[in-house]
Image 1 (spheres, rainbow, N blue to C red):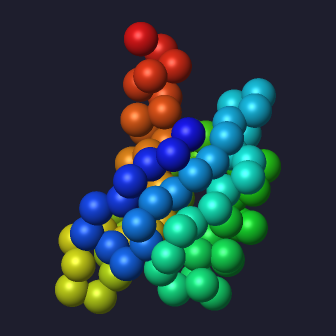
Image 2: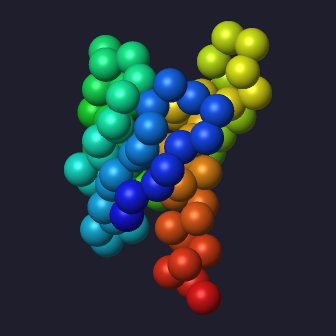
Length: 83
């Protein structure tokens, strides 16, 4: 899935879900070290666990962050799968 981010430095997040596990997460733009770290940390993580851990994280004064945007993308993915 490709997700266009909102309100953060990164422009887009791409990822796959295999057997309900998050894999191949890549951010386009953003703080390279941070986005690489988030990508590696969630690799192989259960989708619901990743959402639980990432949602609501803020970046400075912003009401969202790259990790929070990933949680939103994962929620949208789940909604599409269960329609």
